[in-house]
Length: 496
Length: 112
Image: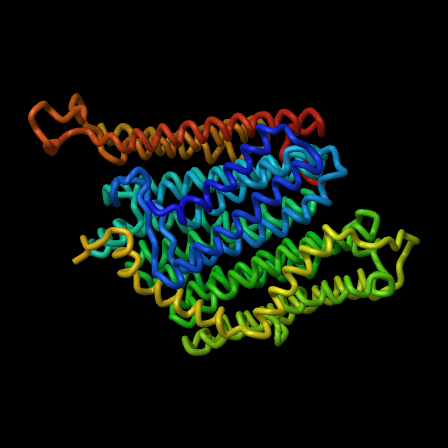
């Protein structure tokens, strides 16, 4: 057994258990949670380094060899996402300390937060499809409670919608697993890929593929099943909304990328054509929704949807460059989106807790550095050079031109402009216009600006030196499109 | 026997979706319960039902001969039942809290 693959799942579990069993509150619990998150981050980074240097890694729990036992697999995509999860865990935990210490509803935040991290990490590392379902549920149950915990009217309404949609999606996922097992007699993803490659009857397999597409589509919030997201992400406290926006939908995108590059590779044209249309509509509907909103968090929620469209576009084009673009986009987006939600929280902190653009204003005058801090992720989201968003969009659009899918290129460019429109709307309303009412101009707590600064500098770093991440994305794309390496790493030399 | 279960699963999915599309909060919960049971039964029956042939390795033999029941789907369903039980319990508590605090029984009122 390889502990490097087990520790990223076990450390958040130990942290959560220690937090619950110690019964600590307040400062002590916060320190424990932060140490746990840092340890998680460190282990995840070393896993990523191990995968980059040593290739795809797999471990078999209880030494039951694949395809019979539970397998954990880390390829480039999984390891990179796990590493980013660690970064998000640390920064949002840091933000959560200040966000949760004062409130009575802060109790229980840290253990649930770490269980959420465990679920997300487990989903990325799962090597068999039923295990993926179980990790999805771990992640969802933690997120249900985090969302509903405050118990206010807005949170309860959001929770009912969020829980319902996710339960429906889980049931569809489960039905797809059942049908796939009936057809192949295996659940291990590498073994599934091997068995289905030999199976010439693709139509039979695509019926379960359709179940997976629907189930992951709901989780990833793509058109036409995205409506649960803007109905729920504006409700919880900033730290919860930030970690949701960064990680949860991206687990859905990851699952789509994994299953449709590894398992359902037959009759690919049908799936990719469908995905391309879905991607275009997701981008447009998301960005139009954002333009019509006047609340910072609702604007940002709708932007998650339109950005998911870009990632699906990369997957749908299915060329090495497009997949590399999607991977680049995925990593860039998690960092930028989480940061924007955190900065949204700081803006609200200076605006008497209001996210309404009408009630905000004058922040540029009193909090000039906050304006700069906002501009970095906002411009990156809109795709301005030299920030990370520019390069990810550039790669995707280049891939679209190479594939000669002109309409998706046109849509992607137009959506990018509209993204800029709504980012400048937040800028104009919250920072530029004179303030409507007198508010405290107090300093921002360290616990608020530090995580935002860390994430902004990562965005800047990727933007100023995109080479390494782009090369890594290309390597990842090569790995995803050539499933033989994945299969060989999991099943060993059984492969012919 | 598979045809019988196929009809049952189909009927359960249909009923579940019908209940989900109605507006009452309680019927929403019933719809979700039926939906998760339909998915479980689908796994149960789609792997093939074998009567009276438990997968026991007889004494003196190393491996199992063909034609025995497959135990894995049942293990999967057990996991799925436990998960859906927990989640549904949470959902019912959430719905009770929502209807008590907000006085909502109709999904149309779930607006802010």
